[in-house]
Amino acid sequence: MTKWTPRNRERIEDENRVLGTLLVWTGIATVGVPSFMVGSQILTWLRDGYWPKLSTGDLVVQSGLTYPITDWVGVQKLIDWIMSWPASLMIFLSLGFVVYLISIPTSLRQAEMMRFHNHDLHSMKNEEDKLD
Image 1: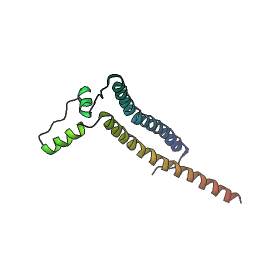
Image 2: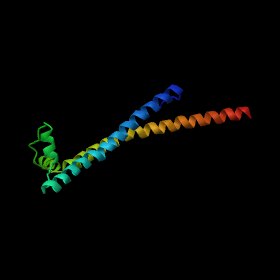
Image 3: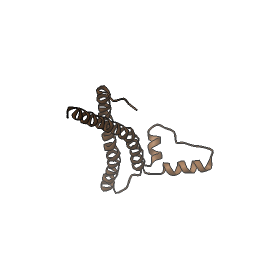
Image 4: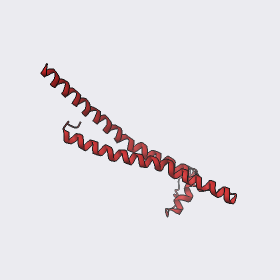
């Protein structure tokens, strides 16, 4: 548990701003990138009359990574199933998971800031009681 000091409070507020900004931009990317991909596919369909399929496996290979292969048949079936998903869905799920991971420390820091705020209120009340 962090000891209350004005310096700690300022540090936590700064870290909250950075995490909050990161959370906002990751959230925008979570919605924006898959939307852009689907929008591009819609435009191609409207212009050329076919729907360009881009699977997660295609995206992995186009990124220069190797397609995962294993000797375990059940695991390979699971990998093949996931790699057949639309790339926009995988990006949405992956970035959504990143947003979730970023939100955990942000929530913990918010709780810590509430504790600091309550400490301030408690200190002010004690000072008022002393004056009475």
